[in-house]
Length: 277
Ligand code: 5IU
Image (tube, rainbow, N blue to C red; front, side, top):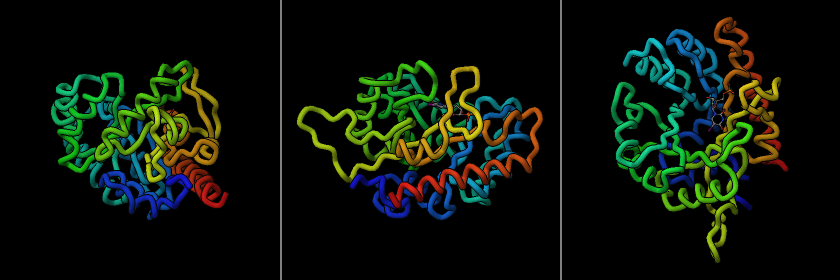
């Protein structure tokens, strides 16, 4: 049986990367495979959404560079909410440069991502050196990396041979790469000539492009339901943004909370169905 068909709790015990283990443990404790993506531009909206959805998530995904009024104290507030509600933090930075540059982008600048983000991600396009560069910063801090193996957008170039190469790169860096941003599972993908699938391999699949009410956003985004992502495609964590907070310009925070509850339940029920299949 493929490792991902076990419970989150069992899978946590077998992870070698601390961020992967902590995330799976949080998923189990909170009975939530929901990650909310908080793509808003004001600190106030950012913090109020996170405080409202906090009880229902195991992971919060940030784009810290879109915050207009960013100050270092925002990170302290974010960390307080992470402790209050028991979730991990994933800065969706999508690194894509040479090893030396990404190490600087990860550790330094205004945002110092590595100091607070348990998990971040990278495009495999530069080749294995991007993982090496990020690992010099992330591994000593017990961080984990996701590779972007596929995208949810119409016409994405990350498919076929590109996705296969991404999985091979991950297999060569098991201590740091904990999984993929993808739309499907990667077991059996990218195996080299004569190589057999390792049954113990257990990458985390985090899936954006999830919505219960819309099929797209008019800008290339394509949505599938939590059921399709988790049950049909074997996703481990669903990533939901606007499906939960709508238009930040006219947000009702009680409604945001209600939607987070609704997505948590849909994601968790799909997982229970997967376990019992
Ligand atoms: N995101 C995607 N699709 C992808 C990748 C990342 O939507 O393939 I890689 C990000 C973009 C946004 C969030 O931050 O996930 C999805 O937000 P909405 O649920 O509001 O569409």
